[in-house]
Length: 169
Image (cartoon, rainbow, N blue to C red):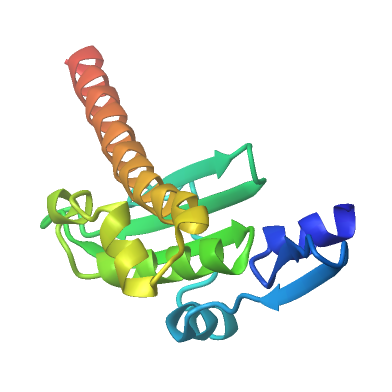
């Protein structure tokens, strides 16, 4: 049974138990071509130095399925625009495709615009089935977490700089 669960879990094969024959019928459930494209040719895979003050890191996961997504953004400090993005994802093809697509969509956007990207937009673009919607939800959460991390880091540096100026005076 674990074998069939594993095949179904990765989205490659679904199972159907034939009642008349008592047998097991395997049905192929293929990914949409956009998912396959992002899986086979992922965009922006990699990582930035998390200590870089222009980098925000979002690390999110889905305990139910084991998907883990790290999305990082590099921000132009003067404009607040996301100038680069990268990701590393451990998970199924839909999780990898959602990360890849999200990293493409946020490049060149102001942070306030990037955080308006919704999981339903990612899911619709990739034609994700309902059972894989958690993957697009992770991508949305990762974008928000990366922006939040960047803003917290910038705020902390501002406070430290202020304290340094006050103590020097």
